[in-house]
Length: 182
Image (cartoon, rainbow, N blue to C red; front, side, top):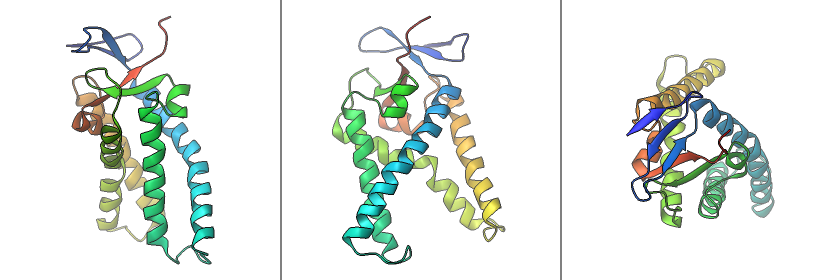
């Protein structure tokens, strides 16, 4: 059971506790998504510098697959740690959003890692699509293709009964608002 509020948030009954948990509006979730990207720039920069120093990388093309794997692991650790220690990254704290299990409990390490892997549904299909379109050799159009896919993925959350993203539905997690009632 869910009901929309005036600001676009959706309230849903949490099965275990019987309490109402508000789903943050899509606008707020996307703002947190963008802010998370800004913060991750620093994480990726430092991890990339560490990688290039450790392997004595002289060119961005040298050992790039190893660097991508290393960054994938670093980002996984970043998200899994924050989601299992309070349920919020810094961006989620700023925008009053917390991730929890569908029953309201905190995420386990395994579920946080599963959510991290599933969250790549935001990007990987769009990148795969961009390599298959006739304009794959035009960077601006490729960027628009990926951004268009990400926008469609975000909007598809409006089809979910509780307005959750599909990777959350797959992993049995949900985003809830921690913003105090006004």
